[in-house]
Every structure is written in structure tokens, then in C-alpha cells.
Length: 407
View 1: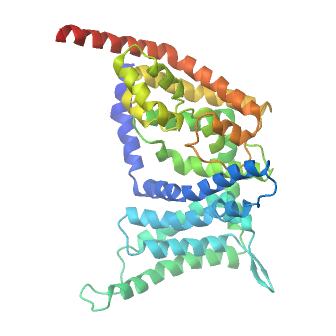
View 2 (view 1 turned 180 degrees about the vertical axis):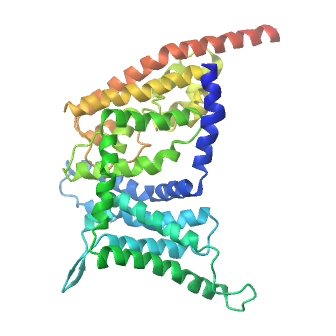
View 3 (view 1 turned 30 degrees about the horizontal axis):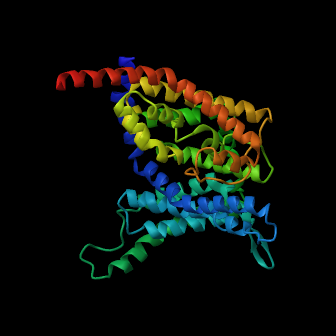
């Protein structure tokens, strides 16, 4: 175990930190984080619709979700080149790069041209186009990055800076738009559908049992090493958003969504630490009891940084049960949903800070969701228990030794 932990700390952790700080990955992360408020508005509409089922006279606010979460790809294609260029210290072009990303995306969507003008399919701007938005955003960022040092003006030019920026950005804008025009319009190639189909195997793999387990386990392992799970969001977010959109449109019954993760896997936060906090709060160790008490309210809202960094991170005794939970809970949930024993989430609900247990009902609208939540909580607590008792024994022993020393 010591050799394994040394390898993790000396090889894996630095590599993941380096990956997380890469400007391209970091730019993608920032773009995803900035779009979350739009997704959360869609989640609020989901809660509102639950109330509307009982109060049918109140107005339908579904359009609010359509014009926030429903435009997620459009937001992403602007933010990706914007933040990548910002990370690469190319601030003078980041705004226009974002605008160029939108231009390219609007072309890739390939609207139908009628006598009335261009007709767009509204659904193409939503989560279904996430992979297209990421591809278009990255391509735009690459082109603009190549032109970072190119300028039409000498250093001693008296031309105002904003005028220089206008002319210097014209070439990368023209190149991005021209390539889009040539491929989509001139060659009549449906690049949007091609990219969606290209990434569909990734979505399908994620919806298999091994895929669901791995995509939940890997960020959990990183988190147990003190590395934020956000490093994995550029992969997870497109997969889960595409899945919940397909479920909402009744085009599929995908199990692995952000809604499933929040309600049934991350009980108290990634790694299902709610059971651990309960055990800590009842501990014989004064330190562990204090940690459990202090972590109770945040964990109830799925904020588990206090307990993870206070007890779990780089602690082999507690890292192992966190990893086991990340395998067992997805397995239970996958089997239960696959066999149709509970309702598969079909509405956007990304309010991860919703109290533990309540989200299980909100994403399923069914008592069976609460039953699965209880089962997973009992199982996860049982997994934590033997490892917690070993850790508790160590802490109690240390506290008794300190008492003797201070006597």
C-alpha cells in the first residue's frame, strides 16, 4: 500500500495538477463553470414545474429553460475561445475570438435557406450540440493562437491600439469563417451531424455499466488526492448534458446524467461522504467528533470539502472506502434503473447543493427514488464503517497518549 500511495503522490498527482493547469483544459473548465448559472435556471424551472402539477393555474415557465439551458451550446462556443485565449495571455483577441466562435457555430448548424431567410432548428443550440460547440470553440482558439504574435504594424506605429486590434484580428476571423464556409456551404458537408455522430460512441460508452463506473470513479480518485473533480468536467459535462437532453426528448433512457449523480451517487458530495460524516459526528474521538459536527450542514448540502480535506485526502484508510463507494453505488444505481425499477431522470436538475434526499424525489417524482437513496446511503455507510473504526482507533489512541503526556 505504501508503494502505491507513494506512486500516486509522486507520479499521478503532479501529472493531474499539470493537466489541470494546462491553458486548454483550464479554459474549457472555466467555460463550463461560467455556463452553470444558465443550467441552474433550467433546474429552477424543473422545481417550478413540480409545483405547477399541483397548481395548474400558474403560468408555464418552460420558455425560461429554453432560453437559458436551451442555448448552452451557443454560450459555450463563445466562452471556450474567450477563456483559452485569456489563459494563453492573448487578451487583445479574446472577445473577438468568442464572437468568431459564434459565427462558426451558426454556420455549422447549417440552417435551411428559404425565401423568408435562414431557418434554424432551435434544439441545435442546446445540449445536443455541446460536442459541436466544443469542437468549434477549440478550432477557433487554435486559429487565433496561431496569430497571436502576428501584426500589420510596427512597434513604433502611432496608430491607436484599438485600431491595431481591429486589423490584426481580421485575418484569423476571415480564416475561421472561410474554412466553415468552404466545408459546410461550398462542399455541402453536414459537419454538425458528423461531429455529433463522431462523439456518440463516447456517450454510449458512458451509458454502459463500465463507462458509468469509470467516469464516476476516476474523478473520485483524483478528489481523494486533493485534486478538484472539475479537471474532468470537460468530458463529463457534455456527456451528461447530452444524456439528459435525450431523456427529456424521450429519444433515449440514459442512466448516467448529472441528475443521477447528484441524487444517488454523490450523497453528501463526491464519494458519498454523508455516511462518513454521520459516523464522525458519533465518534469517540474528540477531534473526529468535532470534524463531523462542523461538516454536518455543508455535507447535507453536498459540500464535502471540510470532511475530505479534514480526514480523507491522502489518508489511505479513508481513501479506499471512498473508491469502493464510487464503484458500488454506480453499480447499484445502474442495475436498478436499467431494470426499470425506478424512473430515469428526464428533466434538467443540476442543483447539486439541494439537500441530500430531496433531490432523489425531485429528479424522479417518485417514492422509488427515495427508496434508492436510502438503500445507497445504508450501503455507503456500511462501506465506510470498518475503515472508519480503524481510523477512529488510531485517533483515540493518539488522544490518550497526549493526555498522558500532558498529565
